[in-house]
Length: 345
Image (cartoon, rainbow, N blue to C red; front, top):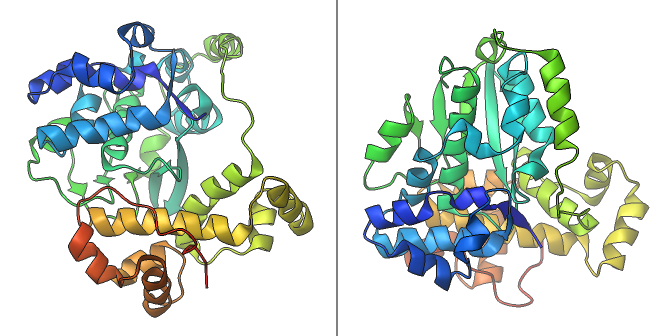
């Protein structure tokens, strides 16, 4: 079962109340008892937590609910990992450490770093099955808060990037982020100068960081090793924008042979093409429902060589071309395609 820290819902009742919801009742209906939230290190099922955020945004008509949740957080609220991050030499090491220790945060998202045209792109990758607007807003806000506080308030990004369409009310975005947000971007995350991540931390302490790592090794984590099929799905969501991904390419990415990966997937009851189509389906409906980006752009993000090939696949899966589907389902939660429709060209 994919999990998140109970800290993901810290302040939920307060935020829900501020937008006219009965927070305690919403938590109970989602299956979360008060005692499960008392310790922020408790592990909660990820699916119900994510659906709670989306449901709260829907009922309150507050389409920045996730960001309001992020606004209530502090550096310490990220958990025991904060004891390590505050002693690292610079923010690049903070980000690398977050990648290495991501299971201490959740099982549904991870950060990655890319350099492009002299800028550093801090990408937030939400894994297939958990892509939701409010979750991405929350995690983007938490990533900014973590880096800002780890720098003792000195760091600021060049821009914030989210793939969603702009909310009706931008006030929360202006309060949380000190720079402009680029809505309907090609990725979720932050961009900044390379130099800003290398600014030395005057309070860095190698010995304290070493002690923190030893302590983190003692923190019990319920998340066991994930099946190969899950690793493939996660990798697809990150790699697709670079172009069509083949089975041999995926095997190389995972450090396996082609035959070895194919055999492992068959043992788990999957074919690579089915996983590829499933990830494309989820991301396609999310992009179409939550943004006005051109079909050409959506096709590129899904690894299609041309918009026409994407349109043909989508029409076979959903019975409608992308533009017509968007007209019917814009701003709706992503939905699964009809059974048997998931076939990649």
